[in-house]
Length: 395
Ligand SMILES: Cc1ncc(COP(=O)(O)O)c(C=O)c1O
Image 1 (cartoon, rainbow, N blue to C red):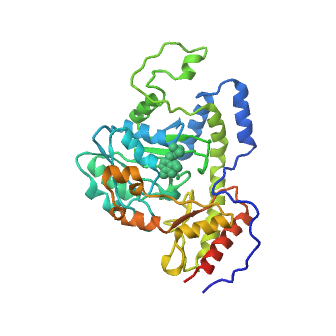
Image 2: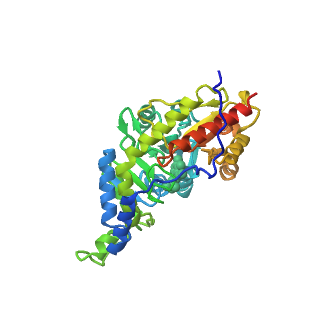
Image 3: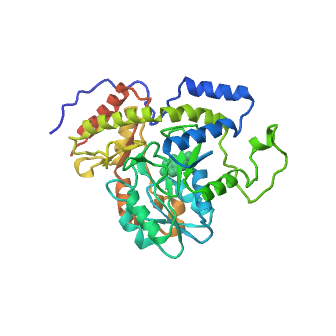
């Protein structure tokens, strides 16, 4: 049965697909930091790390300048080297696999479960070889992967699990926040993410030796960080213990991150309310499949990904997206699966059908705006636009 759609006047301004919610505390924190004279990694970063570790309940938290850096450091720390293989999902951003390439390793893609669009644990084991060095599950859209099954397979094969939690702050799995389940967890604070520092990331781990290695490699492989070198108690002398990277977060970014972290549960409440409103509004539409959710209380709702039903529509996904943009609704597609990008396709000879669930979903998915800054009117505009397009183009 179809709801009656009342055509509202179209929006006059464009609704961005994503926008940060930055308050006075972030502004004050940055100003305080600029006035303090200490701009790079220092006490603000330490404070951010401490609060983040307390929030997710992890033993260690290490702030870095992106989730890409976090993933690179994590894979290096667990021992991924030239010629190794690392298992991950095709339904992710290139960063997840690019860092494997940087280390000379080969990403081994395992297709996703068509409901969650998370890596399908049932398909992991057959892809494990003597060269497999790690498993990297990606918590797609902010919904946790089937971690019990993944961790069980990993433990049985003696493989570390590095979680790509770019979408998953805060996300729960069986009541526990993502951040302490696998061996190392990598978060993103990119501008569109649930918690932002503009650019930034955080790594959590329970293991002292991983934390120590990643801390060393974050800042040139140097035996002392800048804070220790340039303060009164410091010493100019340092030693280079490894050819490290330059992946440290600045205090300016941490000053944005601290108040963001304190509000991230409130932000989630708002996103969850938007998700509920969308699901209620689209439930009766044959043309739209709303996201599958394992547990309402655990989803981090970084993305709200609908799938259009080609049998109920005369238009394809690309036209649907174009019509949303014409109605001034910013949308996106997460993700163009890795195996159809020219680099991965040509390097590994992938065919689209090699990962039928990821490729099938790719042709139907649209990510709708979902962020704390959206007003109720914005949410209504998205709902009306989707419903109108679905109605006007129904088969
Ligand atoms: C699943 C996933 N992993 C990793 C990244 C990389 O994050 P960052 O931009 O913080 O390096 C992203 C960013 O969009 C992502 O979506």
